[in-house]
Every structure is written in C-alpha cells, then in structure tokens.
Amino acid sequence: MNTPRVDVDGVSVSPDHYVNGHRVASSRTFEDRSPLDWTWKLAEVARGGALEADLAVAAAVAAFPAWAALSPEARGEYLDRLADLIDRDVERIAHVECLDMAMLEESLRLRVIGRGARNFRAYAELARTYESRSWSSNGTDNTVLRMPAGPTVVITPWNAPFMLSTWKCAPALAAGNTVVLKPAEWSPLSCSMLMDLVSEAGFPPGVFNLVQGLGAEVGAALVSDPRVRRISFTGSPETGRLIGEAAAKNIVPFTAELGGKGPFLVFADADLDAAAQKAAVMFDDGGQVCLAGTRLLVHSSVRDEFVALFEAATKQHVLGDSRERATTLSPLIHPEHVARVDGFVTRAREHGDTILFGGQRVDHEGLWYEPTLVEPLSNDSEIVQREVFGPVLTLQTFANESEAVELANSTQYGLSAIIYTSDEARAERLGRQLRAGTIWVNCFLIRDLSAPFGGTGISGIGREGGDYALDFYSDLKTLQIKEGTTHG
Ligand code: NAD
Image 1 (spheres, helix red, strand yellow):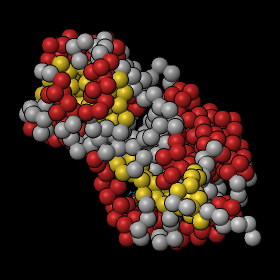
Image 2 (spheres, helix red, strand yellow; image 1 turned 135 degrees about the horizontal axis):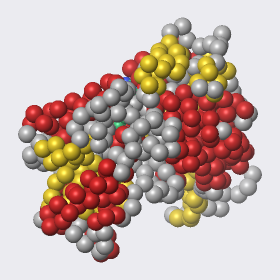
Image 3 (cartoon, rainbow, N blue to C red; image 1 turned 180 degrees about the vertical axis):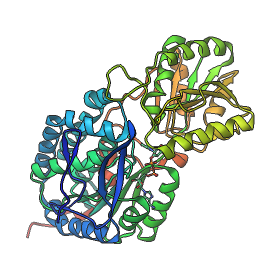
C-alpha cells in the first residue's frame, strides 16, 4: 500500500520508496523538517530497513540482465528523456529542495538542478562513444571489453542531494548497471521527485530504485548485500570508513567522495579584491560545501589589506530566507548541525584561537550561523585540521611559496585547493605540488563533466567524471584471439 502523497508548499511529493517501478511504503517513518522554519514538518518519510533494502536490491538484480543487454544508444534514450523531464520540472524540484535543505532557491533553479539534467545527457552521450579498444601483439588480437558491472548502490549526503545523486546514478545507468539510490535522511524529498520522472520516462521496472531511511539502518543493509557489485558514496570520511569495511567484506569496488578542508592561497601578486570577493563566496550555502577553500593562507605582506577586503566582502552577504532573491546566506541544515558547527568554534575559543569576526549563532530564532573567521594559535588547532562544514574559515599567513605549500598540504584531506596569483608559472608549479583532486586558479567551482573528480587522503577513493566514472561502473575484460582464427 502507498502512503498518500504529501503537499509540500503546493508541490505533490511521495514520501515512499520507489522499488521495481512502484511506490512502496514502510511501517515506520521519520520526520523531515524545513531548516527555513524548524517548526514546519514537510513530511513523514518512509523509514526503510533490511526488508526494503532486500526488496530494492532484488529488483535491481532482476532488472540487470535486460538493461545490460541494451545498446548504449537505447539506454541513452531513457537518460535523455529523463534529462528533458528534469528540465521541465526544474522550478518545482528547486522549490522543494530549497525547503528541504535551505540552499538558495535561485541558485538551485538557475544552476544546480539543471546540472542533474546535464549529468544524464552527458553520460548518455559519453556511453555512446565509450568504445572498446583493440590492438594486435604477440600473435593475438587483443580487445578490451567494457561490461556493465551489475547492481549498484548509490549513497548520497544532504547537501545538493538531487545534483550529487544524479552525478553518480547517470554514469552507473549509462554503463548498463541497475541502481538503488539512498539519499540522506535530512533532505530526502527531491530524490523522491526524481523517481516520479524515472517512472514518467518509462524506465523498465527495477532499473532505477530509491529507498529512504537512516544510514545506520537501510544504508548499512544496502552496502552489506553481497548481490551488489558497485558502491558509490558521497559523504563524510567517518561513514566512508564504515562503507569501505562493508565493501571489503564482499570485495566490491567502491568510490568515496568525502570531506574537504581545502586551502585558499592568496599570493602578494594576486588581484586581492577578486580574491577577497571569492573568499566570501565560501560562506555560500552556509559553508556546507565540501569543495570550499576554508583555510585562507595569505602572504604575510598582504595579510591586513586582504582581511579588510574580505571582511568588507563578507558584510555584503544578506542573511535571510533562502526562497528570497535578496538572500545570499542560508541557514544550516539541522539543529544538530548548528550545534556541531558551534562546538568547533567554542572549542577553538577555549583553545586560545582568535575569533576575528562572527563566532556565534545569529541572534534570532532559526538555524543561521554568523560568517566566522578564526586566526588559529597554531596549525595543529582542531579548527584548522578538521572539516567544520559550516560558515567558518581560518586565516594563516606564509612567508614564501614553500611555506605556503607546506601549510596547504598539512591536513589529512585532499579534495580541492584554490590559488589566487597573477603568476602562471607559479600556478603550474603549485598545481603539481598541492595535494588535492581539483585545483582552481583565480576561479572556483567551474567544472567540466569530462574531467576526473575526487579526492586524495581522507577526502576519498577513486575518481568519477567522464570516462573515469564509466570505467568504475564497468568490468573491464581482456579478450585475446590467436591471429589466424577463422570464422566458423
Ligand atoms: P554522512 O556521512 O553523515 O551521510 C552521508 C550518507 O551516508 C547519508 O545518506 C547517510 O544516511 C548514509 N550513511 C550513514 N551511515 C551509513 C552507514 N553505516 N552505511 C551506509 N550509509 C550510511 O554525511 P552528511 O553529513 O550527509 O554529508 C556531509 C559530508 O559529506 C561532509 O563531510 C562533506 O564534505 C561530504 N561531501 C563530500 C562531497 C564530495 O564530493 N567529496 C560532496 C558533498 C558532501
């Protein structure tokens, strides 16, 4: 039996799972509230467990042979149809995701949700041109065959859930795998809307499934299922470790896109105004962005000038309701997360780090936190070494390039880095020396979907993006036929 659909501020959303082409309810539910107004309960969402995980994986297993047997062109038609439907529904999805996780509605509408459509379209196209490689050697004709790997579990975090889920599901489906998606319990609604579109696009039952629920329950059941042949995860390093252990037990390849603590390097030769403006962008979405450059590393000769420019740029932010156009600073996702962010700042203060500005909850009801800049006592301070995932940056200075590199590479993370300099040779030198999966010079967040994406250190394992993702979701097979073997 289905649960009645929920009216989320005028948009109808199913609170149920989507398994084998049907909505499926659970006997238990969990509450989903809006960070824009914590008294606003958006939905009671199905709380899956071992039973629902089993049903969803069984559906993905049953649907796999026929989906894998389709040509990339035929699979691509489904993906293209889904992309068109996402484009049609961008406004509705953006509105619900804004209510559910508080990212700015305008940014969701103009940029983020549309990326979901582009993910499906890009992978439909890439899969069509993802060819086998052939060559002759040692008296044999060698061919590398790329075979769909099998049922795939995709587990995603609460920030930008729609875009991040499509980023993983698109290549998995394009490569011929069937998928079970589990979005995060703090922002589950936009992925449920995606399943309405999967149904409307006519995907065969079982090819693309969704289960809702808590990570420790349904998430843990999914990643432990021995029928699953790939696991793709985005979230925190702590959960990444648990999923890695489950994957290891079944010897299943998994990719993990984990947290970040990116350095933001500002050299004396940089356009300081541009650097300060971009640094203030790190507070967007409440600083809940894994790729953000949250450690400001500034050449000592321009420290004071930069801090003044940065503080002025930060003051231009407008704190408010994420639905309103004028707002640039949204609230954090959940009261527990606000407490976590505040815990970092409180411990920094107790440790003797200096709060240069901000440093507390905004002084009215709600989940907003002040944009905060901390000058740590030393590089060992917790606030420098651990991801806060909130609007909290640190400020440190360096005397020369080698010290800048040393500081930049001094955490366990390695997801992204940002450099502001006018010296291209320096940019190229540092590009090789910095430990990070993506490095932006004089820019931020510009992405080409064909480029590899991922982290080093505790920021992740594996790469997605372009053919790198198709390789991950495929089993590569070598076929060697002795030259002279005749047609039968
Ligand atoms: P999280 O690790 O708490 O949860 C992520 C997902 O894992 C959720 O769906 C959760 O339900 C599930 N989960 C939790 N325990 C599980 C278990 N034992 N087995 C299976 N699944 C389980 O992360 P979060 O708080 O939702 O997201 C924030 C984190 O995600 C930050 O560290 C951030 O940097 C990271 N992140 C990384 C990227 C990237 O591309 N590298 C992108 C976005 C977010």
